[in-house]
Image (tube, rainbow, N blue to C red; front, side):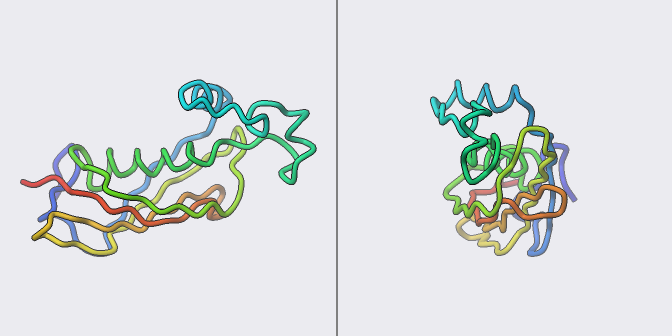
Length: 141
């Protein structure tokens, strides 16, 4: 059973999964560039990006990772979760207009330490574009 705000450590079990989807917009990319200071032209300049191995503009990789964070904060475990660590492997580019789905799955639980390890992936059209593992402190009852 969950609350409106997510799950406490005692409500979770290995294998639980939740997802969060979002279409990456031009505005998202521009705002992320402004907030982060990452103004790499592969993200912002189509003419430049067309000459790269990507053949066009791509979203910031860490913007993709932000969807994992949103899924963890809003879905599983949910409100009150504290990030301890995250590994990331970027597998494919995300382009403006792509709808990306972040999926988190409980890999292991340590109730004594209040820690949860989550498998984390992002997909576009069923193709994995990011994979990793997050370690978090889950909310307590």
